[in-house]
Image (cartoon, rainbow, N blue to C red):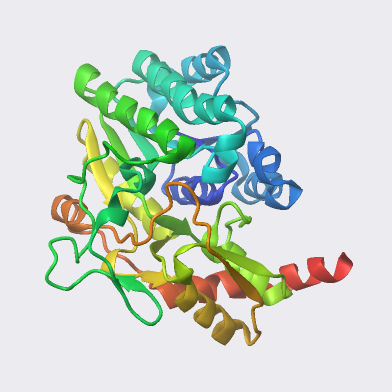
Length: 360
């Protein structure tokens, strides 16, 4: 049986990948050591998800408690399976701007050095395996904020005749912009993944994600925008919007559509591929618009405050240009819009969130 190694298997995209590729007939090896609880507290722990995967997926899933910064451990794992490894889905990361500034060495160790460990282990043990990397739109730094944005009532927006109105392409420069420490560590990893594709001829891809979301997202204040926003609305927990009058725009893509894109690439891989991946023009929302939707879906009011201080390197407006990926993989399409995503998050979590809040 072919092996798929999924790092960060207890997280949003990792757990979706583990379920999906198990259903596709792979033996999935999930790598996760619950660093998310260290990053964001026990509420954000991935351990419950890892336990559910083990129970639900049975013999098709093996959970491995391994820190990807452990080079020897990573190499032993890859050597154990060798040429049986057909696919590597690398989702493990430190994902927060704010947190990265607290511990830059930890952030770079996980995001950059951990990625290098995985790439080189794959090169030695299974160089023909497809290597899929969850990169981020933060590799562009705050350069999108230089676009000629127009202020509307509930959002910032580009003029319709602007070349990037349909979304930001991969040709946007990543230089001469503020990335945040997190963005810099992801740039390093992104370039490494490309280089192993070009230099060693490995089938690698960087998916530069917008806001990746879904019902299993353990949203926290510093990461997981839509899930955390819906949780605050349901539990009547105060919410703070950082900067841009709450009109900053994000494109949002459901985890299921992300993993379907992974599978499309794996069926016809190529070396050193790079794509932007998000909701594009079909699924984007400002923070204020998202609050409106959360309140309508949940039937509750959110108490929120506006802070004038934007997060360092944060985007005022970001919509992904999906044209390159659609041109190369025309069978792929989005199946969730922004309201579909929020309804899924609410239906899957509202009862548990409410119960947990009542116990406090």
